[in-house]
Amino acid sequence: MSMENKYGGDKIRYLPVIVVLTGLLYSFFAESRSFFMGFAVAGCYLVVTSSFFPYNKKRTLLISGGALAGILCFLVFFVKPDSSRGRMLIYKISSTMFRDHYLTGLGPGRFKTEYLAYQAAYFRKGDYTEQELLLAGNTYFAFNDYWQFMIEYGVAGILMFGAMGILLLYGVIRLPADKKKQLLYNLAIIILITICVAACFNHQFEKLWVQLTFLSSISILSWGHLYKRRKIRPFFITGIFLFAALLVFQAYGQRLINRRVYQHWETSKTMARAGFITESLDHCRAVAPSLADNGSFMGYYGRQLMRARRYKQAIAVLNQALDHRKHHQIYVDLGNCYRASGHMEEAEQALLTAVYMVPNRFESRFALFECYMASGQISEATFWGKSILSLPIKILSLRVDKIQEQVARKLRKLE
Image 1: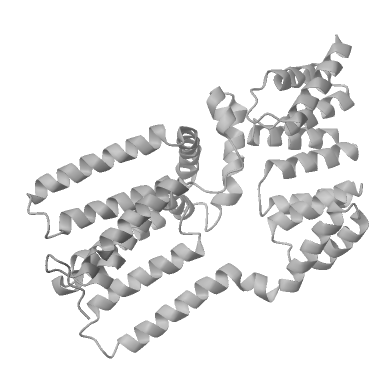
Image 2: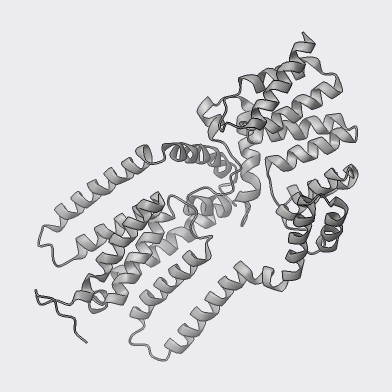
């Protein structure tokens, strides 16, 4: 049914504009700079391709490009500037990863397990600013999906990414003119533009809803090219549904299949919070074979073993956790276990790695300080004790105050 407005046009044709404006508004209030930029680029696409603007296309492109550059600069320098600086640090460190593995890449999914080791190596060299020290954290994403893809897949990833980009552009440009004017195809294009641009500034494609939305938009665009190939359409639809089901299974399949395993883990956490460590460990042992490649679980399991003073078992479990997940707290726990079992050299190395991995954490420095005090290495203890007292505080807390008070008291005794 036609929805004529007073100017004689269909109201529904303004839906893409409404989608873009709504997206911009939502992104603004949600403080999502990546999607704000994505919707801004999609908006410029609508302006450039719209028949409602009888201006010179080249001039429109230049104005749109200038506006986008201004928006980008504003978002980078004035909206959450610390976040922007943090990402610059990530790009700086990850460029070393790419340089070392540009031919073959790190391997699928290996960015998460390797980045923090490179971050530790960067801070261990000592050539960093105080701002970089405060911005460092336990990072598992490059905050640019394309950059992370290239780091993990190397030259093959670059070629694959280039081919997919060209294919996508071809699909948009070569879409029949009558299809581009249709609402569904127009919406698909602006959604594709939004997601592709947003992925330049954040990790988007690891989210299921983004994957399904992107797949739906690609499917709609491809459908526009298959309008004369009716025999292929049933196979195309079947393939899309199978691929969507695969994405859903990848996201939730393991939890659904092993739901009882994860229930045991949750029960273990409840027991641990209540102080029932032995019962908590019973649940951990029951599910350990099923979650042996889950770094988060193995790190948790190792910590519970450490709390139960089963240090030898904890060391084995924590080292296994590090094969699947790097985190400064796992190294702290490992160092404390080594120290409690009398392996002071291994404890020192683990705690040093924890300190350099995320150098703004007081807990890891304090654990290292205590390790040197226990081993009688007074000069090292003094050095790290003073570093705790002079370390800039990122977030004020009573725990930080207590650590500094303890360190200051112990240093006075050493004088």
